[in-house]
Length: 75
Figure 1 (cartoon, one colour):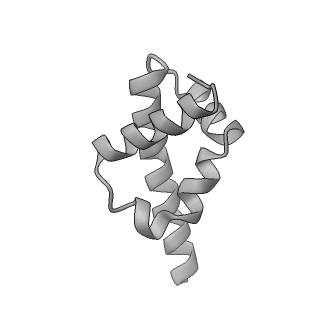
Figure 2: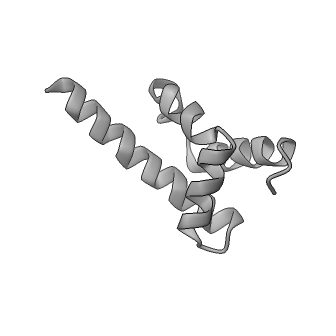
């Protein structure tokens, strides 16, 4: 049961990450934001490091995603 709750928490967090990404980099296009996060490995990075990353503020998450996507040539 705890695993299910944890998975729900992670998915809720990732929805927030997609919303931040779409609003800041993709003119609100959540589908494009999701695909980009998945294709560039950012989705997996944030899921695997949820224990740490979910405590970060929106500004930090946006800055980190910007750096990653710029480095990968996705922005």
